[in-house]
Image (cartoon, rainbow, N blue to C red; front, side, top):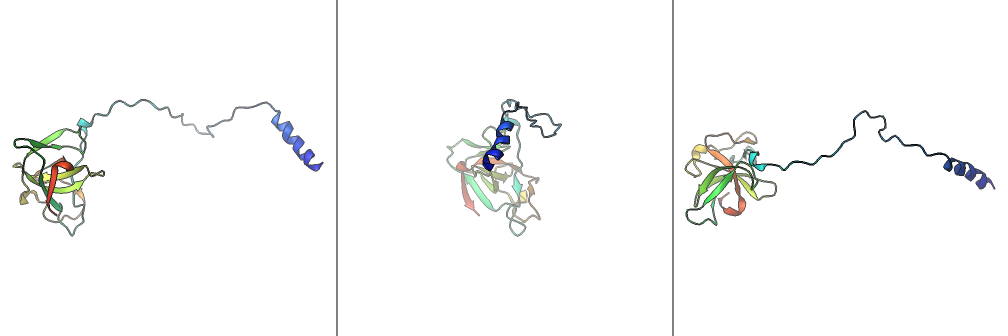
Length: 155
């Protein structure tokens, strides 16, 4: 009997008129409305090649590489960012050597440094340690190449 007396007020409360619930919880920020994104143009993207990734006790670029799977006369595209659609900044000839300084998160791209002749020159300044990780800003050229087209030769 006592349970019935407790249940009676609950039933009466369920019969009341519904009221809208304020979901803003007092916020004055307008609700977020998702809009369709325009297609991303990867051609304008640029990601600098970072050196010093192994720390101050190691050379700024810890590996060397050369091109592979290229026919004679064919070149390896050097991109401004680790994306197929990124702008091409240079082209390495078949057999060119270069410093390998970093890699993309998915390891499909390698950040490389090379001189104007397409060689791993000591003048590039990446054979010595650097104090901290940073974007390469030396005298040589830098960019990103597809790792499938690179054969590591040292490091």
